[in-house]
Amino acid sequence: MGVVGGISAILMRELIKGSSFLAGSVNFFESNSYLYLVSIPAVFLVSSIIIEKVLNKATNPTIDAVARSIALKKGRLDYKKGILSVILTAVNIGFGVPVGREGPIAKLGGSLSYFTLKNLKTESVNTPLLVSCGVSSALAATFNAPIAAVVFGLEIILGRLNFNVIIPLSVSSVVGDMISRYFFGNYPAFFVPKLTYDLRLMFFVPFFAVLFAFAVYLFDVVFSSVEEIFEKLRFSSSYIKAIVGGFVVGLILWLYPDVASLGYKQISMLFEGGYLPREALTLGLVKLIALAITFASGMFGGVFAPSIFGGAFFGYAVGAVFNHFFSFIDPYAVALVGTAAVTASISSAPFRSTLIVVELAQNYHMILPLMLGSVISMYLSHIFEGKIPFIRPIMQKGFDLMDDTYKEKLKKVKISNFIDTTVKTLTPEQKIRDVIFELMNEKSSYFAVIEKDKLVGVLSFRDIRLIGELNSSDIEVKELMTINPSFLSLSSNALDVFEFISHIDVDYIPVVDDTNSLSYLGMLDVNAFLKFASFVYFKDKIRFGGFNK
Image 1: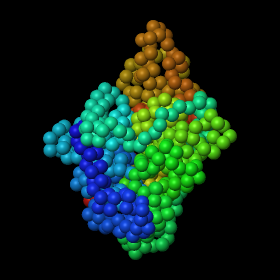
Image 2: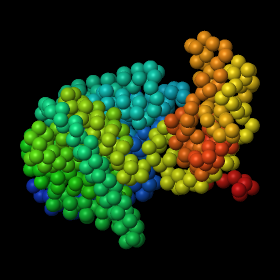
Image 3: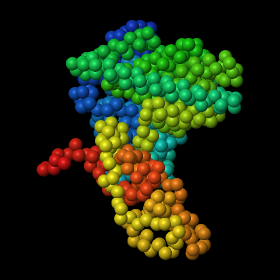
Image 4: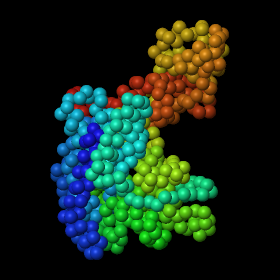
């Protein structure tokens, strides 16, 4: 899988190089940027036709989309569509469309990995892990960042940490990166000078994170606004929408040719002092706006390179302003924080984003402000945009909360239908030795502790196992129970249940009347709930003979 991922990264780069040559080379467009007014609408139109007719309206192969497919489809990626979508994206990038290559490379690595596994006839239970290895190795080869690639597999795709996962991810990422270094040399995607920072900068990082989160929020607003405008215009076909969107993006590239394509060359120029703060601010915001219009037009491409570009340029502008008042703030240090923070906010992956930027820039000394900025910025962007923070752990269970239609249906599900009143309850004064055999015969391993009909705690078998450490036979329930436990109320909906089990993996959840009275009603049967949630997910996709409920 490491070899497959490494080859995927090489193929993608060669495809981009070939399409750039086909477009007349990047220098041609830089000196004749008005040609974007013609070339970008034409590229958008051709892309729209291929997406509509050949790919059957396939989704954009971003890194998150690839991770979502692996989690929900257990690694079964459509390699034919995957390869074609990658070629399409490579051509777009070569012609100057302001998108990234990382998502398509991840898609290619995953698709070729699944194709390889299918022909090798490996055990299907290992498919998600091995496909993840292919994706991680492709990213390692792309960024020259093997550690970040391993974290990507752990944080985004698999969502778990053990030796059975770490070892194959590490081996495949190292192999993929070795292949890339052999062909392209040991060079980062963009060059950053060795940076240092004053510890006083750490006190300003949270404030910078607010600004970075706002920039990401602006990207989301522009994307949503463009989609709404396109809907109100009521284009007769998606092709007309693509042409209009392409013309607007072409106009932006004509006015600001530096935001075209990947932008890694421009990022290197930024850190070499090639832009004034005002220019950097403009280009950073324009890049994110052009990306939003591109995606709203239905085009394919990655979001990682544009988010690094936007974060670096916007961060440099912010840092330059603060440098006027606080000389110890280095604008380039803030720019590097911006690359990680904006990327983390868009991808909801702070650890991966931090490590990729650290490895790309080879500035390991900067990891503290980068990590702090990434985590705070991601948290704030979730608040600004109203994102669900527990999407990924629930996705590992096979439920897609990114599906807005499904999410709205879950909000209407009443948890009262899943309350089991037969699960044994306990009182705080009961002795463990008097109830242990009764608990052993219960179907639940999680029990509510009730006092005067109110929920005061919960007791699990994990709690009971502490008896072996306490060396006492007279231990009461209240000595082992978890006080002030988490619970659901009658006003809770299915999304609340998913949030609960994303934090605590239990088979039963205590339910109370309301949060004030804490009057105990029973235990929610998680397995019964998950069965129903599964039915809600697939019932519209299956035709049931004679079943109309």
